[in-house]
Length: 157
Image 1 (cartoon, rainbow, N blue to C red):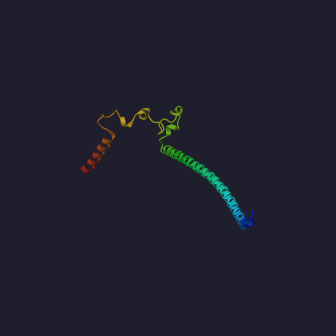
Image 2 (image 1 turned 90 degrees about the horizontal axis):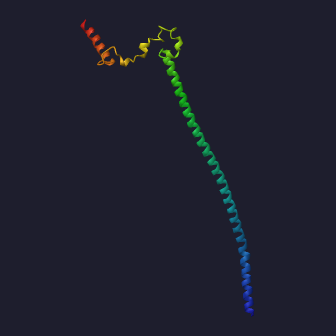
Image 3 (image 1 turned 135 degrees about the vertical axis):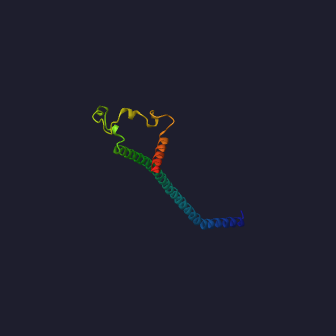
């Protein structure tokens, strides 16, 4: 080996050592930055996952609350319908149209002659199917005919 080769090897070794001495701190700093970036990304992912899990829980709770609200709405509608039914029944009782519900069959004789108990024939008879008059007449024509008679009697005098 010649002196030139030894000098070349020493120069190359010094250059490599200088490069390592110069580049090593930069590479370490870059590695630390990358390590911190990975840690930061892991934290971001973990926190984003927690927020997504919380969002899913809240979404389920909101869906359940909406379902309970729909159920409550239906229950309120049912209660309102029951209230309307009771109001209508109260109106029927107030006007005396549901007296048959107030009187048992055993009490019919006791309340005979009142508006609550009418003649069986009247109760069983359908007013639209009155057999006492000819079939060619119906109630509307009879009412119109009565109105005409009244008008005729008013105009005659």
